[in-house]
Image (tube, rainbow, N blue to C red; front, side):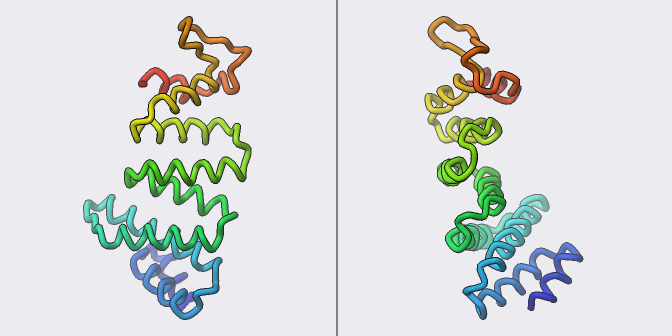
Length: 169
């Protein structure tokens, strides 16, 4: 089954690759590494469907459930978690993305500017602008009280995305 899945992946046939991987984890549910691969492949399949304008809610729910199961089985897999964050954002599941970002930031450098901007963006899109502004103010050194920037207090003054997002809010 794994060889067949690999063949399908080489042909970029994500649907069939996901089917083979799904059968495999059905037979070997303890193979956590394959769960991670399965999650990534089925997310690629959903992305492909979305790009073709053929969104299927049932496939999305299955992909989301598989992604969460893979993360439960591989909680320290940063790449898998990052892929889950992107998947959640692409599908407008910002609260889920926020939860995964917080976990990723706890495991990684919490001060990582890219992750902080992504977290601020998710807060903004989920209607939590104040939390987003607090993060962005820290990155840019913006002081709302006097309307100025203080580069000495900025944790990432060169981060253009942070300024852009702050300007949008």
